[in-house]
Picture 1 (spheres, rainbow, N blue to C red):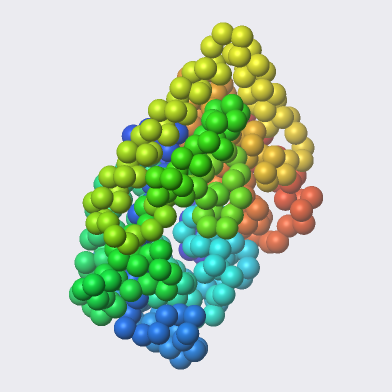
Picture 2 (spheres, rainbow, N blue to C red):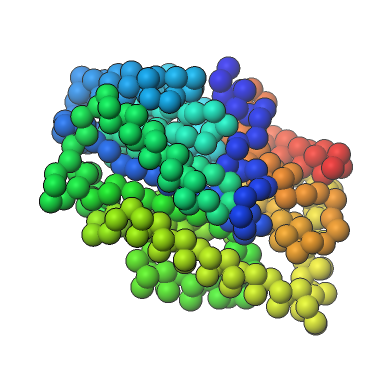
Length: 349
């Protein structure tokens, strides 16, 4: 029932609002924390259950009293996939559900994953480029939980984490950025090379180990060690602002002069397919929605708005469609439902 409720409402982090929301779909700040126990990969069922129960109990007194609490083993594959598509659970958490948990706060702006790589991964999500706001929200949650939980910490190393890249602050900040113009001009490869030199990393739509879909790139700091939280946030904020500026420049170049008619043709071809097709695959839908989102960001008159495109970007994912149909669909039925959903929503806009 909780997942059906989530399906009916827009995720707060995916609203078309906030600074630079036409390029930065959302911002996430995550903190990795561990109890003074062996890491989850070295715990047996009894130890995993102990940490899950401890975190759930603490969360109910630390600002997440009215949140949704999920034990991953109680959900089926489609439900777990829905939470991954919603950017609330990682693929790694969903893959091993036994004694794993997830806490989801109101409007999906605060989450806590339990027994993934670390015992606890807290995250705050905001729409647009809002690193400071996201950090403040997750920091408050961290303070509340630390009053009830004994986190593993050393003065010389900081917070102890399963992966050395998270050691120290345990902080991973990221921006989910829509970069269609840089992709179309071929400049995105050079951008990614530059990010590596700056201590940042680019991942796919669902984070580590996933592909880029719909021209969405998740840009984050590579490590949490050797710098303060403020320094990590400031560095990502500067880089994100620079990427936004480069994407806007590329969009302007593609939408002026001789290049404009080519871009108009591509966007209207995408719109035509979305408004007429009877079968649309997931990645195909994401690519055409990406083009529509680009046209809207440029201020072109099109039968939609950014809020609707953000909504369709989420709702046309496979597990979302299965949940909407309340059954596991065949690939063909899923493509048909996706096409019908997009046609209906665009026609009503």
